[in-house]
Image (tube, rainbow, N blue to C red):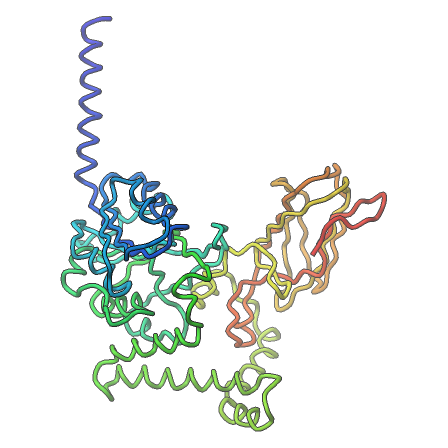
Length: 454
């Protein structure tokens, strides 16, 4: 080998080494705090989701409340962890212990049953920039089941400003696993309130939002696990909302100020509408229904008029405008299954198993409010047919060019339009809906035998 080849090889090696060192120094240090107590069945997945970020500059601090399950054994498998194993006074106290020893430039906390999505840290490192005013960033967060199945339903999240966050009765929260903030925020305004055990993250974000804007990133950052052993499952939605409202009131400023009165009137109106809906249920007593009518006469009258007149005098609202007008829709936009009431959104994916070769695909459905619907059908990722449907009730009967053999097959249906019921009925149903499925079948043409359906 010629001498300059050795020199070139040496230079390349030094350049790679320099880039590695430089990148390590440039990347801000991220501190992840995880409180733990007898979550051995999930905590290893949490740890692995941090490792899978392939991010060079981070520290993962585990504060364990003397777990008696397999947690200590799992923690011992990962020597890079910083483990505090001692009794604590609750989750807030445990997380604050982690914050107190954290050395990072960026802070976050991740529950021992939640996980991060890969590549989240690299995006966070780019987005948090105090010089640009980006002290706090928040992404999106998907729900997942105990068995790691992703539900494709998101944690409802939306941030405008501090006052809007305080209106927790209007829906939208902050997806805690998907929020990161600079160390400066923590040093100025502290960690979690150790007297609050149920909605501690909401209290923290209310305090931070008094001083900082939450910079939204349209990207999935985390997965929030739903399971019966989770602390949030120990209280129902009604109690959780009540506790959140108590936290909200701590930040209403001086009584009878404009800020205070706006929040107070908004809450009174929300309670009035909630009572109206409760009293007008089918199983309500006649007196309750009368009270409901008197409480919400304007709401009922407006909703009925809106439902009847809007489809006549106004074209369907475009999906882009619906998203900007009703951010709640984002929570359901990626849901690709059939809802319990048989409605489906703009994308439907269904795995169907057949026991004998089939040659016929049949879809029967109906839609409303929309004037037409463009519908495209895929089977096993191959486009089979496309239709423009104008009739509210429709039947698609399709003979397949090639029979489908026995086994599992992926059926995908995509539509170009969708609506939300709330836009017409004012019923707080923010699901993006395209059509309602009556039948979805794969049929053996020779035997006319149904193999699978809804």
